Length: 67
Image (cartoon, rainbow, N blue to C red; front, top):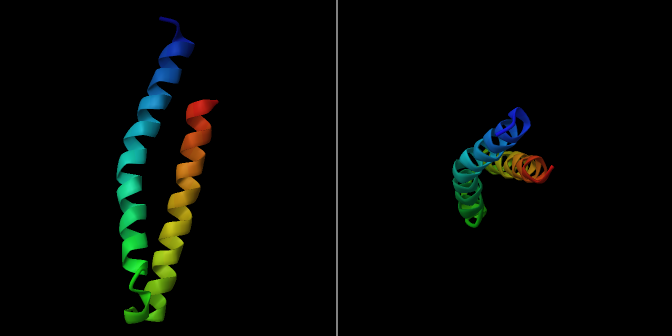
């Protein structure tokens, strides 16, 4: 196994290990936003920010694992 292969494998594992809890965070934020009418405006803004950043991280992970 070359050093490059080992690094690629570690990167894929890291992406996978981060993606699992990230999916749960994104899902919970989206579930909470389904009832946003009952939430305070600042809470909705915070949840939308969590959703946006979670999607951005997910996209970065997807790009990294295919590179």
